Length: 489
Image 1 (cartoon, rainbow, N blue to C red):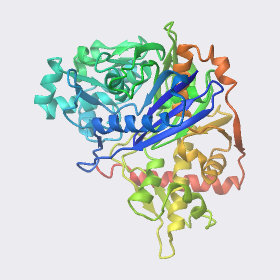
Image 2 (image 1 turned 60 degrees about the vertical axis):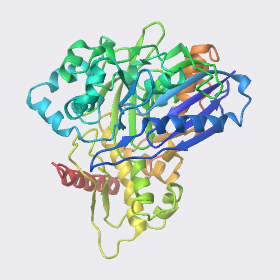
Image 3 (image 1 turned 30 degrees about the horizontal axis):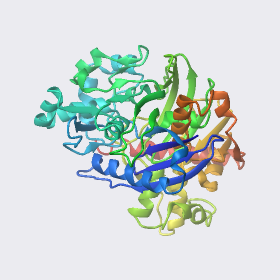
Image 4 (image 1 turned 90 degrees about the vertical axis):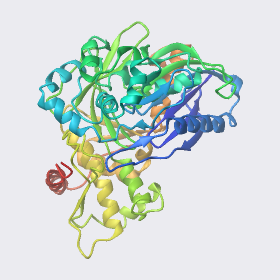
């Protein structure tokens, strides 16, 4: 009675098998390439995502009894947009990734034409290159021959979950869920459906978009001929951040989590009503039950956190692995005045400036790699504090994702936000949430109460340190953020 979960992230695909007691029995992982054809552009090969899915799943299947598997759950990077041929399932071009900034001018144009207030009213989002709708508008304008095949019905449009389900079912199913649909700028948040008005604004044919299905419940069987001999119901779907909220068992209104992945994402469950923010947070769908009941969330989206550490490793090559950053940062008492704003792909919440760029200030002859590494970890904690400053009622923060394993970062975070940080025993809660959804949809778990019992605290980090000094360092960070804005404008 175990569940296979596929987590198709931004830099790789993780496959896990989760047992009925909520334990991850086995894991497989496969990275895929990042493509940067122009400054500010980020693309993925859809075929490489699919092959990484196959390889990660193949690896995990060698470690478990396949006869025990009952369902498949899928979670994914959300705003990345994929086109594929409905017949061949080949993709005519690389996917445009959520981090991509190429549509900044389109956003400015739509804003200048007076559309942002209406878009925000309907979607809970804002006009930013982060979201999928402007990516599709860019494709229509810049690649008209490709777009003509979307309009004729030959090419399907979808997020990564839709694409993977199409591949797993040999093109039989074209579906998504509300947590992915609501990130496209084409979804009416309160109506819970695609918006004809928004499809018209962005020039996207409604028929090209996937059908909407609940977040749990059997959707379609995988085809064993194309998916490693597996014929299992795909029974759970959610965008990665909503999946992590579900995996952290934040089922009640007011419960919050922060996922440290490629970026960092803070979500707070707001229950059955759309809550609007005046402080730069997004209103978003969390999940929809098979009975149609909607749960919503407020979200603070930070574009670069874990990928800043990846940049230290792969770009600057001053660390050998992400895991060693804690030890390196701990060799100095502070950053010696160095401040790093990791706006490598612009700034998300609460600033929303696609023209901001990464900024390092305070460098002197005495600056070492340890100071820069520490400033990077501090920058992550500052970014999260920026968002949490808009959520004063928060009492504790549950954290997950790869960087949550970093004790140094978790303590920095607790110190900066002046609240306890709770780390569960399982920090891969994105994949765990997809497994929970699929298992809930197939009877592995009977209720969310059963799921809540599987959550276990691994460590609690209490805030410490000199409050005045911590606030002063945060004020200096905010000054650096202002200097980073508009750089590429």
